[in-house]
Amino acid sequence: MLSKSRYFNLFVTNQEVHPMSSNLHRIAYASLSTFKPFESNTGVDVNIAQILQIARQNNQKNRLVGALYYGSGCFFQCLEGKKQDIDALYAKLLKDPRHKDLKILVSESIETVGFSSWEMKFAAIDHEVRQLLRQHQLSKFDPFQFSAEMSHQLIGMLQRADEALTEKQVDQAVINVAKKQISYYTLASTASLIIAIVLGWYLMKQVNIGL
Ligand SMILES: Cc1cc2nc3c(=O)[nH]c(=O)nc-3n(C[C@H](O)[C@H](O)[C@H](O)COP(=O)(O)O)c2cc1C
Image 1: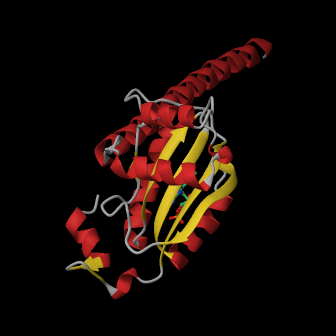
Image 2 (image 1 turned 180 degrees about the vertical axis):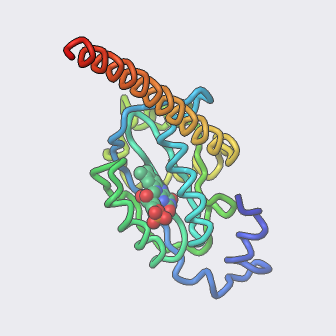
């Protein structure tokens, strides 16, 4: 994670808007996840952990910040940075098979970034989101139905929220799944080898009997 001061300095110096801050933009979009939930033994959904891992690495390089919320199979993501960097990422997001039906809810110029120290914050704010839904007479999290006002309310909640998944937790979830996959692979190849040996031995025996 970038330190708050380091990232903040990219945009604002001594309360004056730095030249870098011109062309700053924010988008928020909704999308539908395409994967089945898959929790690792750390209690973290592996798909989310993998998305956060790549997002945090790339966004740091591309000087993008933002937050991701996931609920009822839907994503709500807010991205802030230079317009051309957001556009480049959005083009990639459109092609990512882990979600579909992307719908832009907010697209606006901003003076300063609201997620100054987060390459991609993941917020566990289910309780607050339920309150927001109640306020707007919605029974489930369906960001496709969100008005611009609701989207801005959620962005504000994400800005105030604490980080729910640290870099360490994300890495651990991804490593655990990789380990599990390796052990399944080892088990499957050992079993195939044993079957091949037994089959080979049996065939040899049959051939010897026939001779
Ligand atoms: C819901 C969702 C959010 C994502 N957020 C980001 C993001 O903030 N930054 C990013 O670089 N990639 C993000 N990704 C991943 C991109 O779609 C894409 O896989 C990735 O940027 C490819 O990186 P590469 O070009 O380095 O291989 C996200 C994917 C999903 C499904």
